[in-house]
Image 1 (cartoon, rainbow, N blue to C red):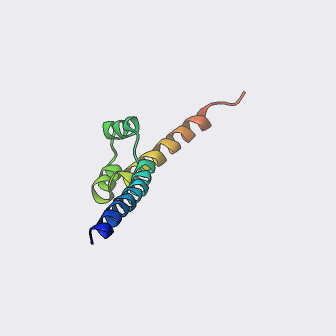
Image 2: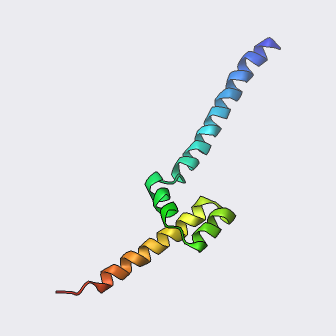
Length: 82
């Protein structure tokens, strides 16, 4: 019995560590940059705040990025071409 435990416990620990590594890699991919979050919170729009409370930071940041793309796109179209 002791022999089985001495083999089984390290295997369980190893599989647990491998599983946690996969979870950590997924979390690392979905992390938010601090400067982007600070910028969003400095000038929040009502729809972004609503999304932040209902769905979390990921949906609120999607709306924020969409707003930034529109704003940058609008600036580019206002510049006269030479």
